[in-house]
Image 1 (cartoon, rainbow, N blue to C red):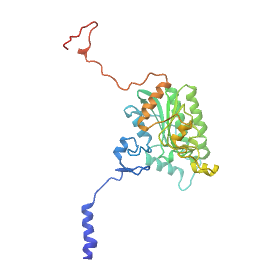
Image 2: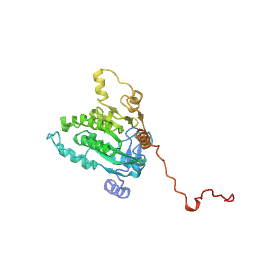
Image 3: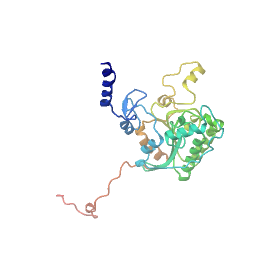
Image 4: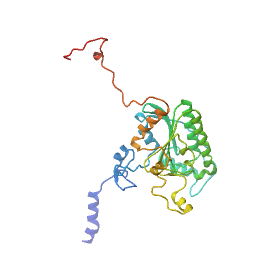
Length: 309
């Protein structure tokens, strides 16, 4: 009986109860713990349908929702020296880059594209937090400069979506040098009279916040995004005081004048179109086009309409 109970019965049960379930079928919301069906979550732009928590979203997914019909053209970014400092910690720096490229399918932590939103031509740049925490290295600096130069050449506004943990330590001082480089790129836009709009997403911290992420003509943030230079724990230990509730969150910064808007991801496109067209002195966007009248319904001048029709 032990043989039947311990071996035969579990074997039979395993054969009849086996089900192949995809591992990525459900996603757990980190805020409320709700299990979300991945298709439903993707359709809601990676926003939790239960608590409205804004999860991270890749630059390509963001651009697909932002640009008209999801159509955009990538802007080429000059590639920097692969490993200028020959940096190594637990892994060699080139190995970390290759691992991040394999995981995300991107060259580095920023994607630059051009296209139209609401029939309004723009240049856009977005950071990918999944790529080494969106850290700012030489490639990111080159990407922002390339985006600014493209915007000036085409006379288009630049919209930048920030998401970063700060400077990339594997590039040392060369990473910190991207702060003044990107500041000069933003100045190029201002001298050309072109709008520069920044959308701060969760999280935006470190040297990114101390440079291009806070230099926009208009500062927008997604709900509950963490935005700051140093971490809250570091600040508390420095000043030896308890920080206010919601410190470094988008709503707190909006109340204290650091932001102009806090906009839900589903409303971001309409908000950007309205702001850009206003800043560029363009007429309001047309929500939809009316189809032209059929030939038989076009009336000649001074024509009379039969009351029966």
